[in-house]
Length: 209
Image (cartoon, rainbow, N blue to C red; front, side, top):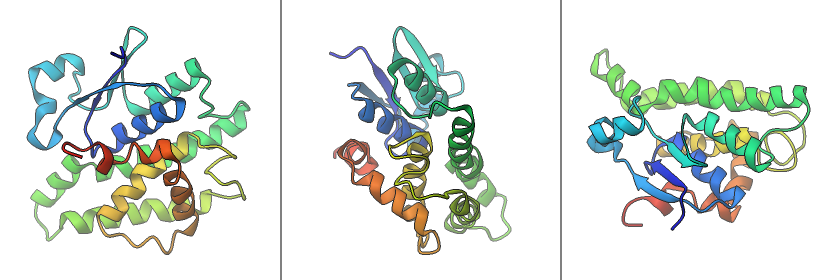
């Protein structure tokens, strides 16, 4: 049995990007499901694993790592994954693209945030909230994806692509039309065609799949 453990929820964007990263590197892992829909992240046992009550958590190399971008950068640094380029200027751009998704779009579209906003009234709906903020985020991200490389930054999948795929999944889930975002859609399609990326898809890892 592998000694690498991923505390995971099948629909979590953050966990999804870590699953992609592990698959691309070829690191086998054991998944421990944490059902966010039932509040399992607040169970005392999980809070001992991650006091934030979040997923993912990755146990690897005798460490217990949290926060998906920190996990992916650790894997990049220890496994020479190539998720970030070597040159500092290129690394800054690659990080900016990743952060545009993981630190701008995802937090406001986190389900607990969106559900709280809807609960305050004012006519907001969950679907409308998600489509509004994902659209705003994609409107900023699309023109940042300049150049003719097949992926967000360079010829191979990188940190930004690992963030982009789950966000595109969420966009489709909430009925967002990707036609105005051809570069985003094209990069996501290339990523999704890779077997290691396809294997991380929520429909492939959800309970009972």
